[in-house]
Image 1 (cartoon, rainbow, N blue to C red):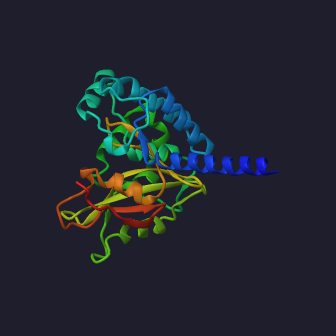
Image 2 (image 1 turned 180 degrees about the vertical axis):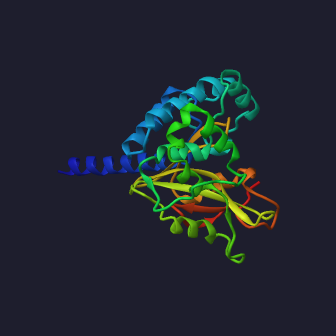
Image 3 (image 1 turned 60 degrees about the horizontal axis):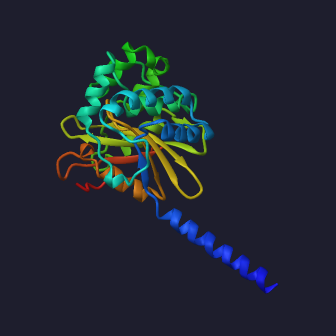
Length: 277
């Protein structure tokens, strides 16, 4: 009996050590530079019911085989703080192998949410400027036909919105989400959006977005960083860790003292990024 009890206690201690060791590994991230990490992330997306994962896999593989190879992107997981990529080599690698536009964060998230994201109403035209590169790609590239079919919803979700309450500009995107009746039919997948404030036009626009997948003890964030820049998957224990990673990207910040950038989860304001640069 004593031996059995000792063995049970030993197993519990080892299990606890294993969990602690596992916990110390996060946050981690990957640019999905090859088959191993691409397959792993696509399995995760399929498991939670994301849409068009096969198309997403084609896009990521195409990028890895062209831009990724030129920039020597690895097929591994790494510490997000140590990850760097030569964006110039990514651009060169893409443009040498394609005569059409790459996709970006908004188009990628929209693809994976097709059929899950719904709106009660949409705008029927777009005369803004912030989505002009998205619109050019969607209208002219055959591979983006899935997005083109729901272009009204795309521009309604991502297009710039005028600030109504100057004292609380962070409510603008939340109010728009509610006004158009957006919702996502999933208890595991949500859309994380970063709204950037433009003081020249007194408007905000969705400068970055991606899919957030919730697990029992961590989150997985899947994104396309930008046109002709890598895809990235990031695992974190909590939203504070993800905020820190996103806050390290200077492109989301304007001049010192300007409002934002504001972060939303399914249209709900959850905080503001702090410049770590």
